[in-house]
Each structure stands twice: as structure tokens, then as C-alpha cells.
Length: 112
Length: 116
Figure 1 (cartoon, chains in turn purple, red):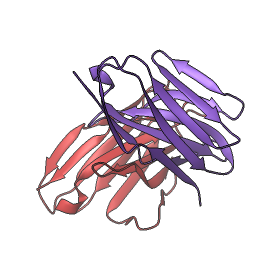
Figure 2: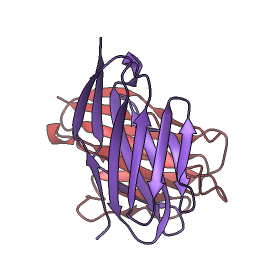
Figure 3: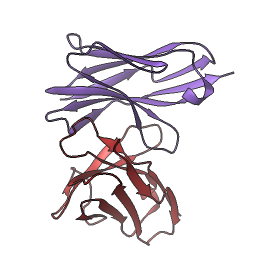
Figure 4: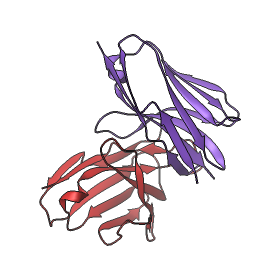
């Protein structure tokens, strides 16, 4: 059964600090892995897209890593801002790239 | 990039009434769109796959007579929640993917439905 697990479930950090979110998956066949940011009451917005051959990808203060051998991914947020408070969802695309397995998300809160 | 628009962003309706939610692909044609449901503090759950010009494919446990899907054009899919009840209150999100662009999968902004 395809599964995506994320940790931690929730996280509170101070503004300006860094944090790392984890994603472990057992999904086959693997097409690509994406990290999404979902603000409260909004749809998910893509942060990074990683294919099997990519190890790291950055998007501003967001850096994602992928270890296809261990089937693990991480999302590192640098110099956090209050606006980073949101749910971060790891999604693995399978097959031809249009079947999705969602992680349960990490709820991040950035405080002053 | 691919843009998916969803309307309305929120709606309140009385029990027993029907509510229609629209999902539009603004800058591409989408033969397939997807409808998700999300409860508080939970992840998205696929409800159905909307296919232009044919019947939608529903996930197991989703009542097709309650959640009517119409994909009458290449840029518009609608989800109608019929005879709504308070337990239908949820966050509904659509998505679409441009043809020949496997990385263009995009979500709409979501619709908060509250049934009173």
C-alpha cells in the first residue's frame, strides 16, 4: 500500500530560526515528490518538485532534499518568517505522474 | 504557469439545499480535473476524477448521487453537493493538470462549505 508519512505532526519555532520537516514514503512506481505549502483556508501551493535523479532543490528560503534509496525527503526552511506559518504537505506522484499519495502534513507555527 | 480558479471561496447554505462549486482552468484546457475534500487538520482526500464529456469516476465510499460532477467543457468542472447536511461541511478543493505537462499539476484555492 502506498503511504507517505510526515514528521513532526506539528512544530512551533521562533521567527528567524531554521527548521527541517521530514517525509518518508513507500510509493511505487515513483514519478516525483513535491512539497506543498497550504495556508489556512487556501489550496496547496507547490514549493518544490523533485524527480528520482534529483538530490536537492531550492526555492528561495525553502530547500528540499530527496534520497531515493532510503525513500526519504526533507524540507528545510531558513530564517523563518511569520508568514511561513502553514501546513506543509509532502505528496508523492506515481505512475504517469497523475496519481497522488498525500502525507498527513506538518503544521508549522512561527512565533515572535 | 498553470492557474486553476475555484468559486466560491466560501458558502453557507441551509440543510436540504444544493450547492454548486466551480473549478476553472484559466490558461489551459483540462480534459481531467480532480475533486478533493479536506477535514480540519487532515490531508486531502480524493473524491472523484472529472472527465470532460464523460462520467466522473468516484472513489470508494463517495456517493455519486450526492456529489454530482459535471465536466461540460475543457475548462470547467462543477461539483454540486445535493441535499446538503451539516456533515457535508468541509473544505473542497479541485485540481487540474495541463496536458503534456506532468509537472503542472495545480490546485484551486478551495471552497469552504458550511451547512447550517
